[in-house]
Image (cartoon, rainbow, N blue to C red; front, side, top):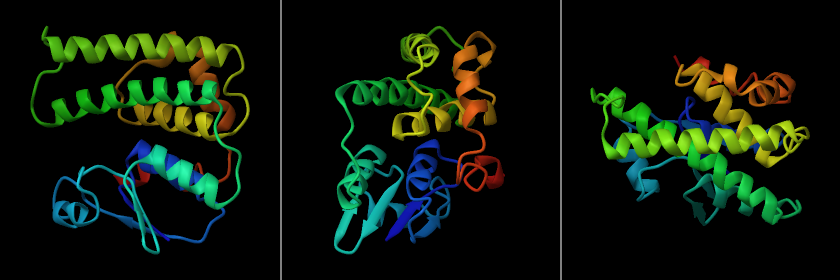
Length: 191
């Protein structure tokens, strides 16, 4: 089993945390630079992570999670958990888009529909996740919590948002900081 991705990616990190007790090879690629062609050979979306397991290649962290759950006999996600992941991914995707805009030299703080929409999505998603976290939805260490942890920690790592207005989300990060694999997958190791 081989996981292709980048050390700094929150989507790759969530998959690495799922694989914490599994023997696999991790290929860390410079996906925006030297290794773009290598990534394209494995994944036509040019996104990470990609999982290769024998003759099976999977292109997305949600699909990889489903595959791993089936392969290792884990329970499928509930509809509530699927909704949690959709909100987490909505915030994550919006943060990534704004981050890439800034890295591309664009001013994502300008009053433009695309940037405004991403900021609105982030606010709405974080508010929803704050309420869910405050209600205990992410107290247990399971896949939605792993994904939320990776999002919140990546946002803190990249200094993209001040979480002081979301104390329940900050508490989820603090509560799960010692989980197996968290220190070993810290994106700060990538810099």
